[in-house]
Image (cartoon, rainbow, N blue to C red; front, side, top):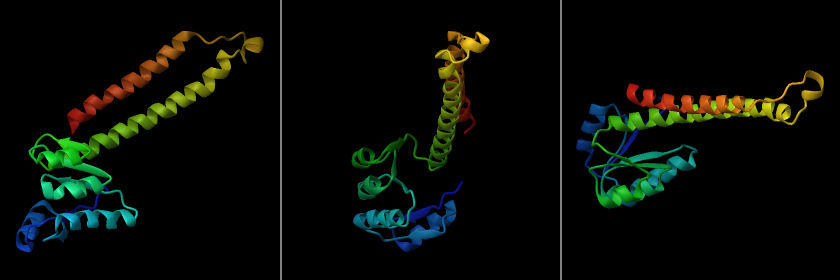
Length: 166
């Protein structure tokens, strides 16, 4: 996935290492104070990384606010939910993977729609202006515009099937 997970927690080292081992995280920072969590986020950002933070408590709020993308667990505290950009409705870490996959597919669709809309406009604007009319007697029919809009809408609707796959 191209994601480097790091566990930053206020819990003791023994608990942190046990949880990290269970979920497959190798980089663990334990016994970190709330302000220290935000400092860890900023240190990753200084290195040029895009940082996402997942948290559920009041102690996670500064880091959620400092992160490029903050994700609060839905069962978390109100302040964590307010500080986050996204709220995961279930208390399930697999939803983080789902959110990342869905956002990547969404941006992929946006890019494809942009490419096809640009290509259509590059061709259709000169034709609509009458560039080909003197030579070929070709005029642009409005149905072409509707077809392009239909393509963009159908392509975007594919996200529904993508979200079901995830």
